[in-house]
Image (cartoon, rainbow, N blue to C red; front, side, top):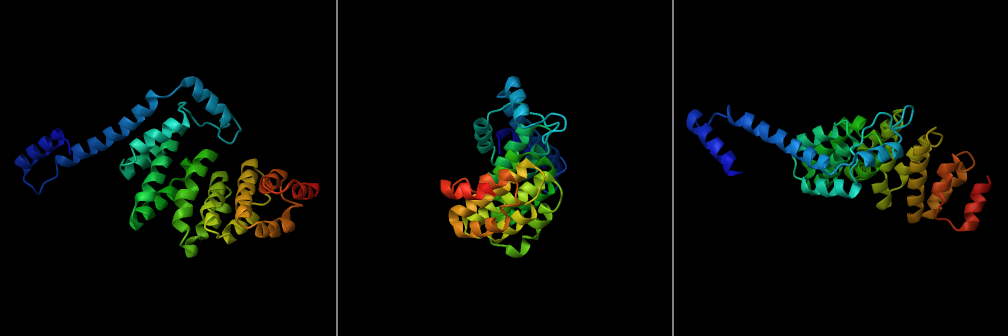
Length: 267
């Protein structure tokens, strides 16, 4: 606690007695708001309008595009990660407010902070972050936001809780592009731990999805699965390669030998 905080608290105690927090709570809330304002100010100070416009085009923010209406301040990814690390001890409520911002850069930074907090949290803290994430999926609304966070929070939390994985199937069948991507990307953590069943089940649910971003996500996860066990991946492909979207197939077989790739691409 700073000297200013201690002095304020001492004056409040003198006036009100130790049992009263009437004056202390407003000052505490003020501190929370100032901390949130501080990280926003620091992020804005390293922003670039031309870069923001470039990111807006890259992440398809135009009318009718998947990122329609999203706003970018224009901050390089490496810088956002550095600032997130600096503010990793930000209170969880402040991080949630940052996540609910209209600016993509703030939401990205908030999600990096949550992943950092998750790795250091005890069981109850991990559950709190997991629940916060699911409550705020509407703000996790582009592929970079999903990809940096879903495996490290949703996947990590559910890794040793197979009975709670029904949520992944609910997300996969939600009809929401980003929740569907969360559902399959979360299984990346399972794949790394040689747990493949839910990846295959969710891939089947999303097999004939209309959006390219789901084709890429499913193909990517199938490819990662194949790195661990190519026989299991090929068993899945042999059933579905003739009907699965071309992009999904190309992603799935990217690491196969050329001769085998050509076989699957002939379909």
